[in-house]
Image 1 (cartoon, rainbow, N blue to C red):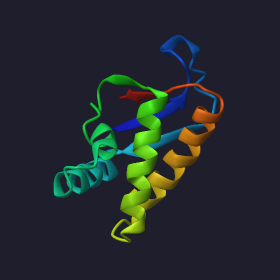
Image 2: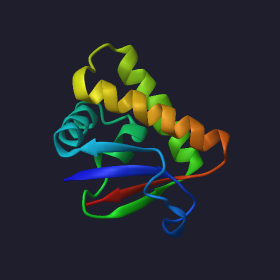
Image 3: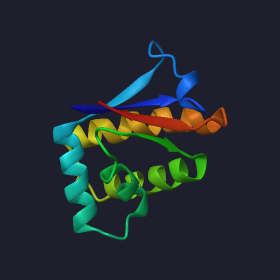
Image 4: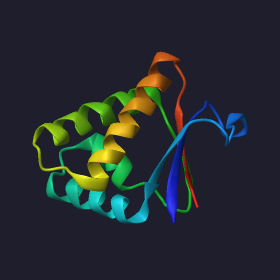
Amino acid sequence: MAIDFYIADRMKSINHGDEMVSLEEKTHNKIYKIYKNNELREGIQILAELDPYGDRVIEIKELELIIENIRKEISLDEVHGSVSNFFKEFIKLSERAIDRKIKVIAIGD
């Protein structure tokens, strides 16, 4: 089970052939543990508490908060492996969305 992230304003505008980032269940669980160990990271909370079976539109302000929190986590040098790889890819996707003034949609399995 995974959560896929696409740049789009709404569900109907998603093109599944477009660029996307996937968050695997194992990595999602690790992100949840990071959040629980540092509950002040509101942006990490957004990712940690995503429903793996549901969908969610992530607004531009939320993307900015998530990016800021991810960078804080990465700077602590405690994040590595699949979490680090996901964070880096998510930042790239989110920055492209912000530049285009478009949201990111998370789609669960």
